[in-house]
Length: 381
Image (cartoon, rainbow, N blue to C red; front, side, top):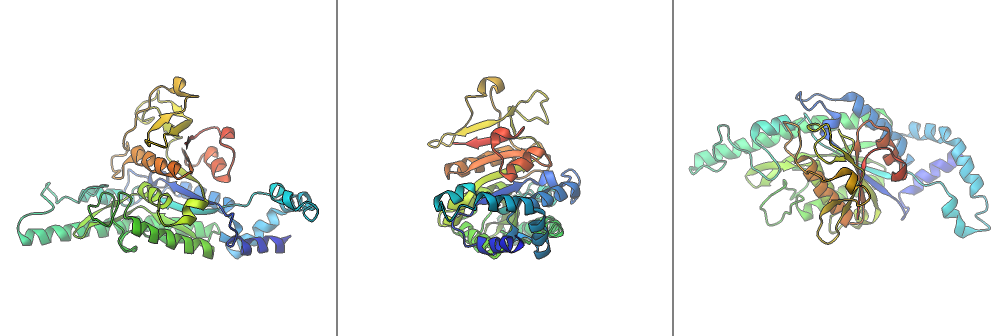
């Protein structure tokens, strides 16, 4: 039994039927967003434990994989019993086999690591940093222009350094839970990567198509090697002399919509957003106690418009879409998530928005049928 599980792990990366789940966990879920550079370690531990139990064995430490093989023994035996007739009915073997655990790509937000620094410097998605006092980032004199550029790069470097601390904490916790995780910083590490809203002719709203393809290739190589990539929202160049923000939601949109990377397009099963609320509500539940949870949204494949599913539209009423209610959020809140969700759905992926540390989030990551899950919002075509 143990040998069989090890062979499955070794052969999994060559399987053409592999499935990939992209999980984006919000910074407000894994940090205390009100207090600068403060971890929510309990939430990070929950997330690492969930990933360790759901990801394919090939991504676990050798000792963890062996332990998993032992603990899953009954399931393996049952699987062997149900497939014992393979030699007689080869065509029926795939339906009787236990579903393989997926590969997982993790993207996390910055939370109190990065957002506070970005706010101080005026960094936002689609906008340049602004000198203190509201001065123009492009003063007329050459000396002021140089001062502005130094200010921009100071904003970029300090914000990026802060969010990389959170990335290191996420990777360390996943390692502690037996997952072979590696951090990937997309910003200046990927040639041509630009912040959201760059006017560069080589970039798009999702960070630059060519650069996103390079990021996808880096992720592909990690997955093929049995390494679970952990990517973070980042501060990076907006244009050659300016700094900006490349948020985690924008990264999700870029990865699923990458034009030249068939691995992501063909093998991503769904995209799961883990947030600090139970899903999409009729209005901000942190400001309106009467806000109603919307269980199902539909995307118009022609226009990209998002609407409440007819099955619960009367119960919920209208939906208000806005930014984040967090004072330090510089990445766009729900509006950015729904923009990424539309791209994912248009690429054939279902999208789920669900609350951190909830049983519902666990069930969605484990692959349960959405109709059996108590909370969360499912977005489909």
